[in-house]
Length: 202
Ligand SMILES: C[S@@+](CC[C@H](N)C(=O)[O-])C[C@H]1O[C@@H](n2cnc3c(N)ncnc32)[C@H](O)[C@@H]1O
Image 1 (cartoon, helix red, strand yellow):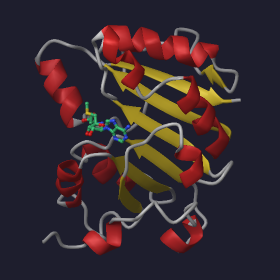
Image 2 (image 1 turned 30 degrees about the horizontal axis):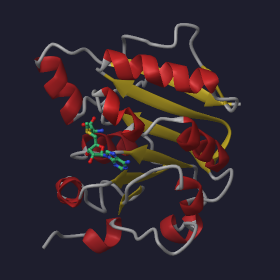
Image 3 (image 1 turned 60 degrees about the horizontal axis):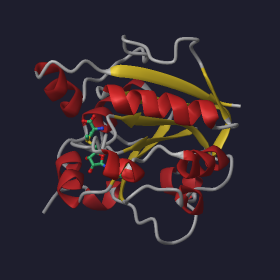
């Protein structure tokens, strides 16, 4: 039994999320997609008490890892949902309701026959664009060169986003309070350096 599960865990099958009801405030809302073991979603929001965060993670075991890192006293502005994010994300969140999204080390699916499983594609970006507010940002990171090039390509093709930096792929972290996630740490140890990308919703 994990303490505080009821505080953090939300169901997303009931139509679009009512943020005011969920957080009991009207503060901006940010998503983390693929929260993994929860380093980012448990630490980054503590630097931004005036923002709300929802972590979205597909795997139940990972959700339990994350829950063990959260407490209502330290993370009152965080909620978590077990869900597989895809191009239907616009059915879960209302249009123009999200201020930004963090996608850190999404599964790269390196084999060509698996590329269609990659999260970042035109259908997903179109759906994400619908729920993001004007000027909202998406921060993406990956240590996989092939996926980095793919991500740049997908964003450049999409009419709803523009890169914040002329050089799309940056080698240094873009957030003031950079949180080294478990996956980033592991991959760096193996010699794979992370790349960071930042896009703005037009
Ligand atoms: C490579 S790990 C990275 C985890 C974490 N962001 C990090 O940097 O340590 C990818 C994570 O995304 C989750 N994931 C993959 N596809 C997903 C999807 N479509 N929706 C939600 N979570 C997903 C996986 O279960 C896994 O925890």
